[in-house]
Length: 412
Length: 161
Image (cartoon, rainbow over all chains, first blue to last red; front, side):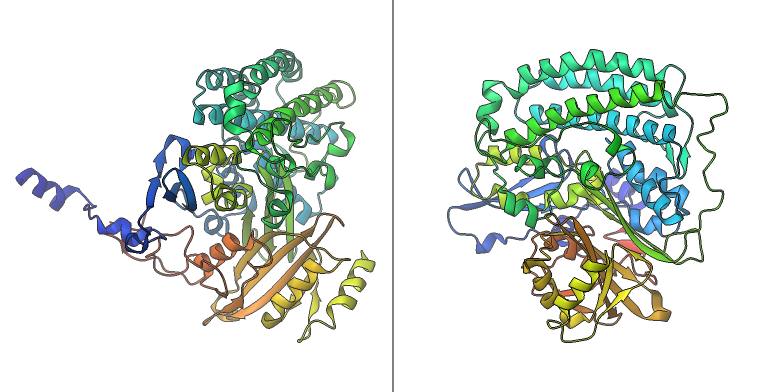
C-alpha cells in the first residue's frame, strides 16, 4: 500500500480511473437500451485481427453481427497539423509514415502533387520516372504480400505468413539498398531522387522477379485456392458495385466489385502510359462478385501485373535510359520550394486505393497553408459497417482483413 | 474543358438560389457556392444524366485564420463514367459554422464530414452520426483551427510533449 502510494504521488503521471475510457471513447450503444438477446462485444484496440490499434464495437445477437461501430484515432499523429508547419521537402518523411507498408507509393503521390504545383510536371528525366515506378511497384508487391499473408493469419492459416515474410524480406533488402531504410525511405524527392539506383540494382531486380513469379504460383496454390480458405471467404462480405462507388471505395476493393478502374490507367500519370499491364477485376469465380475471396484474388493478380511492370522498367533502365556518370538525379531538385498561390488536388493509385493530397499554397511561404490527405484506408474502412451487417462474428474478422487497412493511414 | 464548364453553368444556374462563381488558380475546376445551396447543387451534380458525379472523393476543411474570420469546406467530386473531376468550395463564418450534410447522397461523406467536424467544429445538420472521429470524445477545442491552444492536461496526463 505504501509502495503504491509513493508511486502514484511521485512517479506515475497517470492514475487509473475506469471512468476515463467511458469519457474518452464512449460506446455508441448503451447497455441499458439493449434488447434481451443483444450483447455488445468489444474487439481491440489491441487485437491481432484488427491489424493495428482499431477498436470495433460489435452489437451482436448470438453469433450474428447486428451493427459494427469502428472507433479509430488511436494512432492519430497530427500529420495535417505538422504539415502546416513544415517546408514541402521536410514533409516527405511524415508522408512515409502514413501508409508505412507502402511508403514509396505515398511518397510518389505526394511528390507528384508538389511537382505539379511547381510546374515541374512532365519535365523530369525519364530515368528518374522509371526508377520511381520501379521502386513503387516493388513496394506495391510488398504491401499486397502483407495484405494476403496477414489475411491468412486472420483465418487461421499460419504457414503462408512465413512464406510471404521471406519473400517480402527480399524486397525490403532491395529498397534498403537504394536509400538505407527498410520501411520509411525518403527516397523520392521533389524534382528527383535521393540517389540514382545503386549499381547492379536492375540486374538484381530481374533476378528477384524470376525467383518471385513461381512463389506467387505457390502462394496461390497454398492459400488462395485452398478449400478451407475458399469456404471462409467466398460469398462473405459481398460489396455490391453501386455501394462501392457511392461509399467512395477505391483500389483493389473497387476492382474486386467488378469495375475495371485503375488510376494508373485513368489518370496516366508518370510513365504508366508507356507500360503495358492489365487491370484484374473480380469475377465471382468462387462465389459472388465483390466477396472477400475476389478481393484477395485481385491482389494476387495485381502482384503479377506489378512483376510485368517491373520487368519493363528494368528493360528500359538498361537500354534507353542507362546509368551514366554524368546523370544527376537531384539536378532538378529545387533549392527553394515556393509554389504560386493555388489550390490543387492530386491523386495516385496506392496499393490500398486512391491516395489524394489537397494543397493550398498561399504564394508567400515555402510551407503549405493546408495539406489534406485523402486516405484510402480511411474511406475503405468506412464501408465496414455496411458490408458486415448480418454476418457472423467470425466472418466479421474475415471481412475486416479483406479490406486491408493500415492504421497509420486511417488515423494519420 | 471549356465545354464542361459551360455545360456545368447552364445546368446549375437554374438550380442554385444564390449566385456562384468559378475560382481561379485551382485544379480541378472549382465552383464557389453559397452555403445554403450545397445539398441542392450536390444532388443535381450526382443525379443529372450529363454530369453524374457518382463519387465523393474528399471533403477538406480549412481555416483562414482569425483575421479573415472564415472557414472553408471543399468537396472533391469525381465522375467515373465521364472521367471528370470537380471541386466545390463553401465559405463559412468562424462562429457557429453550420452546413447541410451530404451524407444522404454519398455514403463516403459520413466519415469525411465527421473528420471536418472533429478538426474544425463545423456542424453538419442532418448528419446521421456526428461524433468526434480521430480525437477522443472529451477533447477540448478543434485542433486544426489556426488559433488552437491545446489543453494543459488530459485525464491527468500532461498534453505538452
